[in-house]
Image 1: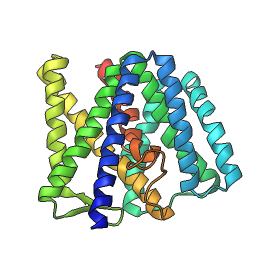
Image 2 (image 1 turned 90 degrees about the vertical axis):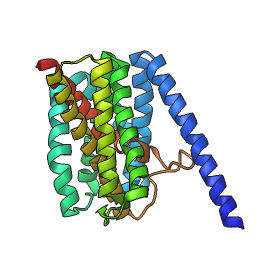
Image 3 (image 1 turned 60 degrees about the vertical axis):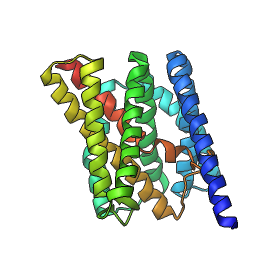
Length: 272
């Protein structure tokens, strides 16, 4: 009888942590000015860098240096790089390199290559989170909601209908049926946003649907990419900061793809 009690306790802990995390993130997102939001995102980047350094097997000294150096590097990129540079990097990595990486099952590099790959994941995420917030916090919220809707819909539809594994060698719990359910949910979400919040014309709504579905695919790629790294490193969670939820990288895996690509698509949306 001990196991069910432990499972119940673990589920309760996960729910409570999720509620606190979600409520705190929403309050910060909507209530903080952009500079303060950026400071919070720098802390997230620092924690993510600490976890990434362990994932690519840095020793203790290298891990500390990487964690200390990554937030100021992210801040420097925010002021030094144009948005189009981050947007281009996001498109090339998440829509070209990441699918190829996952298909080939390449190993995460160690040493300088591991450091560069971590920066390629963390720096654009920080850049996009702050840049989108400066335009409107609702843009960040929109990206977060898309990732949450996709993840939730995939879980429930996969649990009920899932039979064919999406990526059995990386994340056995994902199914093609779950992905289809998530795609439908994301399409409905985009349609509602286009009709009732943006009051867009049919052409713009069609564009929004296409972009939202690309972001949905990117959310899966972000999740799978981090899962591949953890599987290769032989770990279940990237960290233990969040009881029942693992580490920071476990929470922002999808967003590391969704937010930079959202910035890319915002530039496209504004240009046409």
